Length: 627
Image (cartoon, rainbow, N blue to C red; front, side):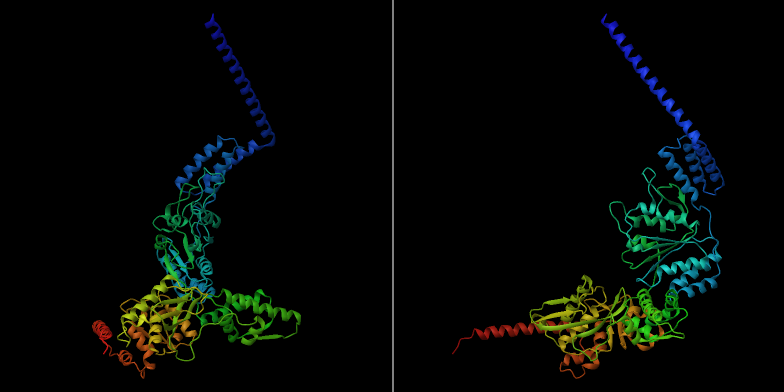
């Protein structure tokens, strides 16, 4: 009886469950039928079918890679089986639209007229010979070879020298579409490679987005501020750029959103950066570096007269007004109202002058009114001078040497001062210096101590004096391996009270053996010396090859001395002024008859031996009995 009752209870449960399931299915069937009827009334079902048919037609007509066609057919097959109102259908539809919108084989024909391209580049930019030559070379090779893998050129230089505008001119000269992508502050790898479709709101990366926006598979693609990329927990975007910029890989670039190979080999990539050291070495290896140095004062004058003043005159509505903008006014703006390597601030200050002229013209418009702009008129309009550039001292000074520095604003004169006081050999460095320049100072002190006997100093002179080495303009940070020669000359001058020539400037690094090592940025440093009216520049022998970059008028105005050792530097900077110096050893050294390093070492050892004998005799005398 118990078994029978249990069987009946199980059958009752089964009947109840089946009844509920049937009711639920009937309810779902009823609701689905109702929804389809509503959609039919609204026309959405027919619209979805029309959309599917339209996508099929677009896939059939669009010229794509074989892999892309197969992938889209699969995605379309999945889309047909989905409800048009489902979230996944929206994702699939978006994916198909993105792939179809890409210019797989749509390209613009290059203008391969080299002379026309050269004319356009010269029309848009003054100077910048190296970048222009490289672009012309690319076009010449493109004309000879049917397909060349797009080069990756990196324009490195300070702000305002025309890196971004040069890229636009390249696109205009080649007849290609132009795409600009700013990489400043990009931290996420997905910004480059895109997001996977499993994420909500997934989208392709900026590379694919830029190609899609241009509508061409071979645009000029500018990667602006590539040195400003950073990394965090979301990945390293600079590592993701390796695949984009490597000519051996970018013919099959894979975006995470597309998950298809896309050919970037025909894209002409141009990168810009302010500094080279902040670009990772593997990424730098993929690029061809072209350095854009700052403009000379003559270049800025010509740029202002030919480009900036006409442009700002038009923008400020002064085309019909007689304005005579003299060379002296432009030089006043360059020297005393701007401090930069480029011309961006110069354009702003030029616009400020013209705005004030526009105000005066509007206040009292008269027929035939003219404005003559000279240096004094610029000061009247813009107020007191904002900047000054360092000039050479008026007299030869002891313990003061003209150094040369390369800054983000171009070159500048960097005077170095040294004062010797009584003390215990302490070295004090001031002027907001970096680690590299501090190490140069310590190396210079050690070298001077090692050459003490040759210079007529006691080997233990440092035990009785303190050195204070100061770089003026203490609020400006200074660093770099090019001040060792300047510091060593300054120390010798201060110790021996021998003046240094006021018309000499120098640059170079030294090692502990006194060798003068090569430096960078010679062109900018020489231009700074030229502005400061320096007549002689001392630089390392190995930098003699860099003179071809310096303008001819500067080469004529400056005498160059190429040093192998610090002894050469001292003889050129101090010798003419120390012929009557009381220190015989210094006179011999400057005259070229100083002992060799081996003799110097032997003399130093003999001096120490004699000093020990003197000290022993003094102690013995102190212990003698008093009679």
